[in-house]
Image (cartoon, rainbow, N blue to C red; front, side, top):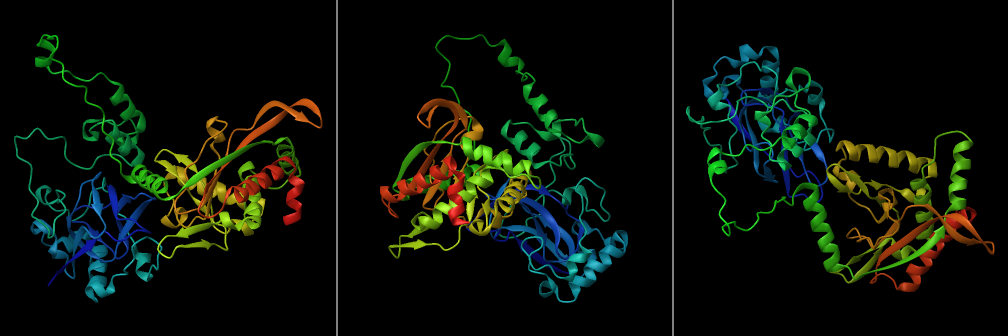
Length: 469
């Protein structure tokens, strides 16, 4: 006899309490194997595929695409031990599903929940069962699929509720999976109020592309005939209704962290202009010598780690409950990266022990992962100091907000030619503004000023770094 097991949304990382469903990877009636990804979700930190620890037949899904679920809420239910447990009376689904269904049910029947891997993310302690992982595309025909009335996604509730079929006379959009692969396209459609089921994709096999959503949002809106015929009456116009943008996902996480930083940290900012001509020349010489190219961000990171070795007060955090300053031995360097999903801060582990070449490679890897939305929660947590290169936006200076619970952030503006007194004469030099925002609880202005002055000296005279190498 089949045993129906409920799989709940697991804890996907530090401090995460909810996740948004981006895309379902299975439908009701599908046969799933142990550790097979069943849903793609977006948290405040990353976008991940969630594998199911049970093998069997999907009997219900909970939550619509675009809906936010709390950790611990039901995701799906799986009938384990007998493939004929598919909903809607889909008897004989094991025969229709073939050997794959039999293998999945046999694996599950060997111990039910005890045979599940217990994984919450792909690759975390994956057992041998992961070798049998089979991904089911939502847009592909699925053997032993349940009837349409049973395949309607259920809403989150304490127990699975019977799905309701839409009324025959309801003016509902076309049924079936929406031909969209990119989560960014879905996000763009939600932001612009576009119903993806009403669009015809211009991509291969009708795939909806970003251009299709942008074209639909640029088209003039249809005005109801009654509204067109109604004459305008002076003085009857109501207040303008502004656009409401939900504070969730990355935007919500950024808002929460910045608010907490402003509420808890008594920050102060100091800044200095520095002549970066010699630093730029040193970088050019390194890259001309052959080998992997060295990025400017990597050189600035190397300067930061050297400065933190001299001023460890700024590589710390405050423990309010214990009323202690915790100085940290390792430098895990965060850097601000702007993406289509918003501002994220990936973390370079053990930056103090890396060379400029190693830092360049790690910055490149994390930046690419940030752009594609594939950063893991581990890539976005545990930072001890942040480097913010806002010069890429074409601005000279800023007063950054500290990335809580860190104690300081170094901001770097654009490097531009400016008049500068060099060796007693007026010359055109490449000048950058450096700013340091620091937690005034961990140190006073003298320490912060000493740190910033050392950074500026290294920028102006890269040979100063040789003392710490």
